Length: 432
Image 1 (spheres, rainbow, N blue to C red):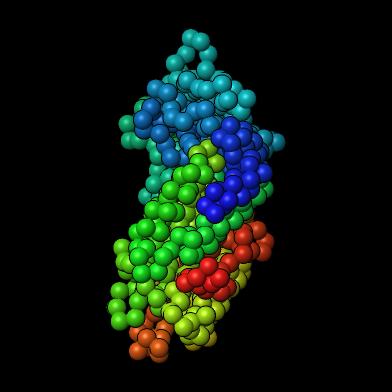
Image 2: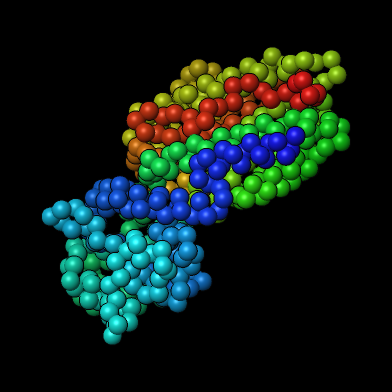
């Protein structure tokens, strides 16, 4: 059965050009070219920058470079720079490279370094020729993926540009938009990856993997990891599998033998080798007792309340201007309906905890300065992460949490990329 699952998933991944690896590499190049045409002009215009400089040394790669370098340029070689100039008359982007580069880059970027120049000579000349108003560099006090310029390179750039160094500005508003917005091709790729992740959860949370009374939560974690690796993909955290049990005050119990009556939960996300999108999903299962054929009604009702909170947050993302506004509206509406909510939704994409507005934070349910104040933009993926909790009578009024997470896309509407969990998975027999 495992072999059948792997074959089915490989067929899906091949159809989406995510397998074999060579196809995934070619797909990543198509995505990069599309992003440079449809995302970068928008990001530069909206952020008010007409020049963007990305510079790094070997073994000190700026995190954003993995979204700008093609598959055959994994790291910087010695010293490398990319420069983007938005021409004021046309809005067209001149895409330039300086320093060592790969064959794949030659079909994407213009090589502007002359034989007699080093990288610094070229940078100084290009800046003088373009004469930009504002130069974005990758510095940020909030997100690491927007803060990739090292302090030594920053000093060298300033020394090189002389009077033009006054034009250097922290480029967080540009890099955030560049990382946050997704292209049409990326949306279809992400949909496939989410679907595959859903399939891994459904199989892992079944009697094909779990033998009640013997299998541990850690065993299921390792099954998930090995399955992801067999597909040729990677997991970017965990995966984590935990449970809640009657009589225990711990809401996430790890490394436990799975027993009848347990409420099982997983948190799982995968990513590719050259396609670097991340999925992030949380689903819940109930372990049937000897005489049970369905989950207790209180647990099913709690899942329904979790689905209702998902809908409230989705609508808030659609109508609100900032992450904080969406968070505060969601909490207020949920509490007005009698729910006990916690919301900690985040952008997702090239990075798991991605660029864009944060909508709540786990354990700190207040409006967040910085990322919470960022504007909600279209064409953004979010991990719709949240929970609801309430006392469960059949567990002697023990507080039980329904942890849920689904990947969604705001693109006018706010839709699930591959549906959501609306019924508890039942574990106990092949038929269940």
